[in-house]
Each structure stands twice: as structure tokens, then as C-alpha cells.
Amino acid sequence: MRIALIADTFPPLRTSGAVQLRDLSREFARQGHRLTVMLPAADLDHDWHLEDTGGVEVLRLRAPRTKDIGYVRRTLGELVMPFAMLRNVRKSPLARERWDGVVWYAPSIFHGPLASALKRASGCKGYLIVRDIFPEWAVDMGLMGRGLPYRFFDAVARYQYSVADAIGVQTPGNLTYFEKWRQQSGRSLEVLQNWLDKPAQARCTIRVDDTPLAGRKVFVYAGNMGVAQGMDILLDLAERLRPRSDVGFLFVGRGSDAARLKAAAQTRGLTNVVFFDEIDPDEIPDLYAQCSVGIVALDPRHKSHNIPGKFLTYMQSGLPALANVNRGNDLAALVRDEKVGQVCERNEVNELVRLAEALLEQVEADPALPTRCRQLFARQFSAEQAVRQIVGALG
Image 1 (cartoon, rainbow, N blue to C red):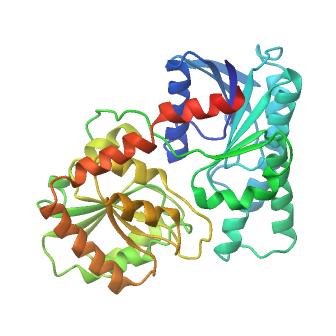
Image 2: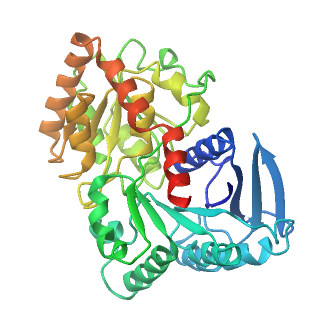
């Protein structure tokens, strides 16, 4: 099939979404499809740039900046983004290309106009990959009320949903949100699990043995450190486990809370905690090979379901998970049913300490634990399965 994939993140960015889309695009190519990834690019000095990245065609289109700027400028930039991208697609060598399917990735919620235009021109179906339900999660977190800003973002999101012929959500718990959408004829709704490609073999620039955590059992968190993660309780956990000289905590990544968390750890004198900036995604497997447990954190105010990309990387590397998540999250049942870690749904540090210590004992006593993690990944989270589902829905 000739497929257009619209997104706003892709390498050289190092976000989990960028890595996921890189892996998905590679798998489309492996399965014999002709894929073009369309991306906004604020730094281009001309309207478009076409490149080949590992056998995948990437079309970067000049559009307003939407990353690392204030909320108002970001909103305005995202609102203009799909129209700027469409204008510059029409100036590119792919202006007259006809597609067998259009796929787009949310976040962002603003891709609807571009996806609609490409679908209409080619008379093809569209598949929307939904990884978070915005603005609902922002309301849950107390970042937004249900006033005018909410109604604006909700209208944008619902327009995007209306453009799709098929929607893939990341957990069964998110299906109910789209029940009304599914009732219209010709629409399909399914669970499309998160995915990752085969792990890279790059040596990690972080060497745990060269840090104060040398010789300890290390709990590692690698990824975004922002308001949606609710990570302060992890510092509480580290403080409670400070008397244990055999346990340490390693935080790797960036985000709106990263500097604050690092400063808080220093203020508390947490000598069992080390922070590093984000690293190349290809270094992650070697980082995890130096650790004992992977940490998942989601703010307890969330009401939607989420299986973060970092959980997949832990499973792929055979690393059991310690998760602090919102009550009822599908991730909790998955971890317990598959026996691949411990989950706290109460956001209580006493409970989290108990579960962390229980998991450390399990790591020592259960040699089959890493194998169960890898088997879960292979069964549910492969890029191959994701591509087959998307192609099937477009077919």
C-alpha cells in the first residue's frame, strides 16, 4: 500500500513518540509498503525537504514552531500547523501523489484538516492512532476546567475523530470513550497496543558503576518528567529507602519537572538518587542492562488509561516494573496478571515502599521474572502486529 503517516514527532527528536513512529515506519517498509512520513518543521528555510531515512521517505514541511514555547504560542502554532503543512505539501514533489491510506498520530489533536484533505484527494480511508485523550486528561489533572479553552480543544479533537474511519486506542479501558463515535456506519474502533522494534545494541554513555549508585540494585526511570507523571512520590520513596545502602534510584530524561525534581533531591540530601539528561534511544537497552527495576509513574488524578512507552522498553529488556498509577488503570491489571512487577494504585508512599521491597525480593527469588517480561513484550507489543492491524483496517 502507498501510505501517508502524519505526525509532529520523529527522529532526530528523542521522545518516546518519536521512537515509536520511527519503529512503526521501519516496519511498514519491512512489510513491503511505501510509506511517507509527513512532519512539521519550524527550522526549514524553504517550504519542504524530502529525505530518505532507512528506506522510509520523510517529508518535512515548514510550519510554525510548536515545541518548547509558551502555551498560547503553542496553541496558535498548532492551530495553523496543518494548514501550513497542507500548503507546502502542494508545493512539494508529492503534490499529486495518491494514497491508499492516511494514518495520523495523536498527540497532536490538530492533524484533522491535513488528514481530511489527503483522504479526500485520494478517496482513501484514514486511521487515527490515539495515544492520549486530550483535553480530557488535562481536566482530570486540574490543569483545565470545562470552560471556553476546554470547549475549543474538545471541538478540535472531535473534528479529528470525525475524519477517521478507524481509531486505534492503546488500552481496552479507552474504548468506552469512543462508543458514541463508533455508532456511525462504516467506523471501526480497536485496541492498538503500543509497540517497539527490536532493541539496538549501542553502548550507553551512562555507566552506573561510575556513579554513586555503583554496586546497588537500581530502580531506573527513563523518559519525560512532567506534570502528567506525578513523580514527587518517587523522591519520597527514595527518601524512605535511603537507609538501604544496596538500593539506588536513577532518573534519566527531560521535561517540565526535571530541574525541580533534581533540585528537590539535592535539597533533601538524597545521596541514593542520580539524575541524567536524556540519552539517545538506542542507548536505552544497555542502560537497563545495568539496572534491576523499571519505574512507571502516572499522576493519580488521571482517569483515562495509559500504558506508557517506557513500560514497553522495560518489558523488552526483561526489567520488571514498579508502577505508581491512577486507580483502575489497565496497566495495573496487566502487570498483576502477567506477574511482571508490582503496582500501587493508592499513591501512598507506605504502600509504594512495601511494594518496592517486595519486588526486590522477587527479583532475587524468581529467575523466570525477566523471561516473563520479554514474553509479554513479544506477545503484545511488537511493531509487526501494529502494522498488520493498521493495514487491515485500511484494507
